Image (cartoon, rainbow, N blue to C red):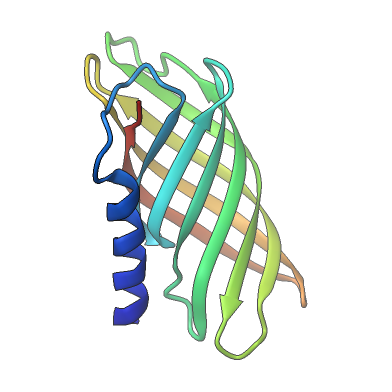
Length: 153
């Protein structure tokens, strides 16, 4: 487990070590803590739609690597404020590699909240995602976590 955490930390530091940050760009990368714990990335395709990706460690028994991807729809101005606070939702997929060679593939639906402070280069988010594994058998579970991402130049 320690080795995998070091690998993920190395990848993250490598990707973010020599970049300039700005909020008005389309791509952000950061980290998520929860299920999974690891790297989170987001690519905005418009002002209200984005692709969200996660790569991390899963704390489920016998699990190793967790990958997910979602297509998100954002509802802006969830609260009447000068900051950008959005509620987002969307469909996605998850792949979980396991130590017992019983890897799992499933669909997920994500629901979350996003805060983008005015004039800053970050977004802060919290999300929950019900998951229905389809391969090798059906199983229902939840993913979720909190995180922060930094916009890249």
